[in-house]
Length: 148
Image 1 (cartoon, rainbow, N blue to C red):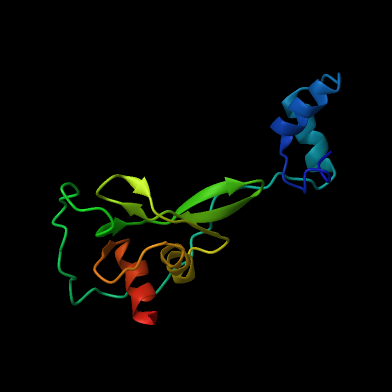
Image 2 (cartoon, helix red, strand yellow):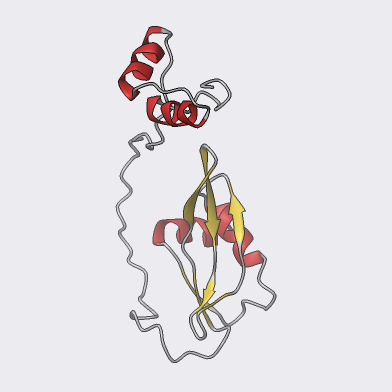
């Protein structure tokens, strides 16, 4: 059962699955059996990775000034990549939204949280970006639009 889960299930999930099959064991007993056989559940917490500090010397102008109302359609877009749990791994989704009517204007899905994800989302738009103001997460936005 542990191998069938991709070595992800811990004692709680294995106990619950066994209970569904009609086998009654305590979680502690399942845990002892797992430890005795060298089995352990997979932890889904992200590992800390230290990165070099990059000070932000030149602040970007605040064009929107936190005012998200009163714009014409397709002139002001905002996006922010988010992560979604898919099976036993994570996927990232970027949904640029139109601030005028609060509709999703495009989308992009990927396995990495990088500039290509945001670029693909804006490339999926069905209107030109000539006069658009784009708001996104600052460090990612800098990497995206320095590549364009």
